[in-house]
Length: 484
Image (cartoon, rainbow, N blue to C red; front, side, top):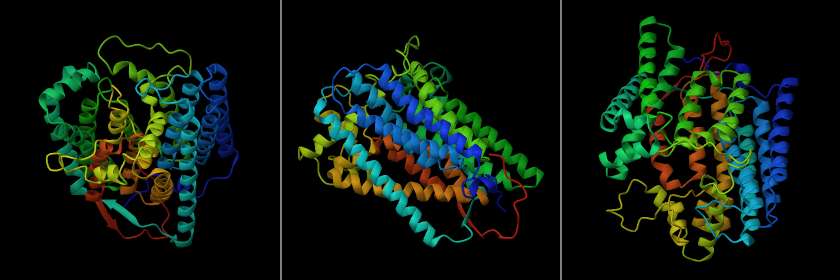
């Protein structure tokens, strides 16, 4: 038996009522109108280019899309994070950086003449994403069955994941120690580099400690929702507490990268009830938007050793010159990379597919795209992002942008529909819908080669947990809903 995780009312078609429309109107007014308008009003135009107007349109459209999702109150988290990334990294941040003529300090010397064509490339990707979403909805409406496939979790695998992840976490903590974890990201990174000089080994230990445990906790939470016997329930609760304790130490907020911490916190928020009904879904989405606007910049103060610096030049001071928002400029650099003829068709993508192959076996294995673009432009910092637009350009120019974003629209809409439909049955898709969407931001930001290893651990974990169950009886009403 599998118990629904979201009430049936949250999984059906969007509710029609004043509440839904009020949420939409307020969200769009704030995200699609007020914020872009304030950015233009508060950031003086330094005369770099007029392309900021295109960025305003991107922000307004992404704000409109976010408002629709907030108003609907459905757990369409993959689409939500796609549009949230677009809103901040391809909309608001470029408006500020172009108007102030302060691009990311790690991507200097991008010619102003490239601003407009780069933003139109972003728009092309968004249009193709919308086309892919429409194709997915059309295909689903033709083939949808009355009852969704039920996919549960294997109890033994779930228990094994929590225990194995906790053991790896214990090993990690024993080698790193608690003091660096309570200090800063720099302190932890230095200790990890000393303990595990080999970068893949270092990443594997940390990813297994974090994501194997997280997947196990999510799966155990699903088992707890359908278990009625007292002793197994006590066992599942104990396992969940052990897993959460391990996660709270390994991913201590002061020393964990912000995107990683955000992925974990969002997953736990959903698993602990953040999507139990439409109202909670809306609250979860609003809290996430607020966190990226205000908590994300504050968390940056603790990344480095030394006194935290909370100085911000107004609401939009976070974006001007900030290396975290180099996405647009890396799209411009990727366009140059493709136009130069130095990029091979699909070469960067092949490196992503064969991410597991050691460089000792493949000496010419491509660098991650962000580092490759930095090397091409002789940047002093190579740890740069490469958003999906840049990845597509580096592998096949504008044709690749079209193909990649149509496919992405198909994929995102398909995944979201699976998560929403699982509201009636619970099970594995609920775990996927909690853990994968926030990590999707890391995939969108890139580089893909850096993000693929962790994503592979997540996907393989989900496949190992998968247990196909008989479909639910259509006449049996949902007696209760598990509280996530």
